[in-house]
Length: 161
Image 1 (cartoon, rainbow, N blue to C red):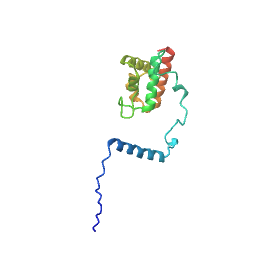
Image 2 (image 1 turned 60 degrees about the vertical axis):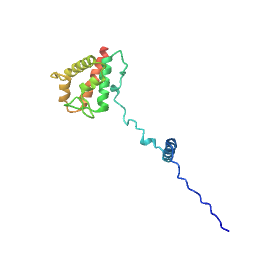
Image 3 (image 1 turned 120 degrees about the vertical axis):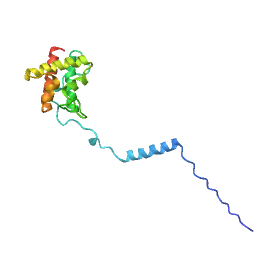
């Protein structure tokens, strides 16, 4: 009597479909996310100090009562956010006063009008200033530039322009 042993033929595993691989990847990502708690203190940052009261007025992109005041205010905010430069209109991380106004104005005419208002404000304190870019290049820190932009925005607001 002879016994026969049954041999099982092994079939190669079938490759996973794209959808199956995607589902496995999603489960792996979910497992990593669920295992690492999120600490919001590492994510949320709030200002440590309160902003200057004069810098945050009623000016916004939709301000139609004093559009030049709004442009000057937004130029101030752009320099505060992006940084200030001298000798160039724009660098990788900063803008000059003229470029900030140009970037925030709705048209070249509005930019020229806003620069004229700023130049009038500058000339009250610096009578020899020829142009906004020349005056900007003569400054050594952004404090004076920001102060002049803020004052020009206030002047334009009072004049309703």
